[in-house]
Length: 246
Image (cartoon, rainbow, N blue to C red):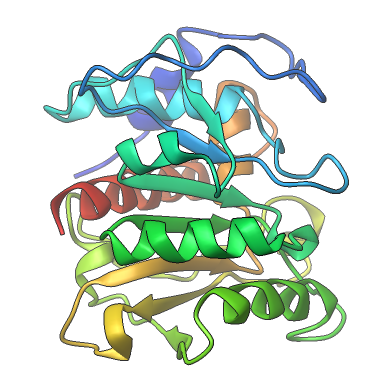
């Protein structure tokens, strides 16, 4: 049974203290050596791709190393574009703030190749509190449909294997972090199956009206309460393990 020590264990390191950000600065990538390396996607436009960077990945990889048998790089992570051939070495990638993601033709082709190879994409941190499926959703959907024109974006139930690959998630009722969650905005979880076949694996997991990365980033502070922070960790760990094993 998961209790407070999960989120609190990220606090012991205190990686970058107080919430310092690296806007516009990218740390050197970790050379490929077969260990799990968190791969974040960089895209053109406003500085949105680096939300929660690099604190979120530092906290997540520390918990992965503590709780699982995955050999994990804890002292570094990678940033790639979808058209970077090096991305093909990493089976799990993270795309944040897709409400501002407008891929180039090269990025569209690169993501299509990446998913066709069997990779798993985590999409996180976008919301439309005033208009459901509003501008941020529409921007993301326009981009992903350029990659997968026939894709069906399916709502997911808590019984789906992606929510049970390590932790047994009991409920998907998770508030958006901060004031919008306090006002009742709850996360929604969607997926895109390989070949649109629900008997196949997921190629893409989509956290909508949700920011799992923000919970993980701020887990070493009192910014958010413990219960949803723990659930965010569970989700991210499940996503990584699903992507590595399916």
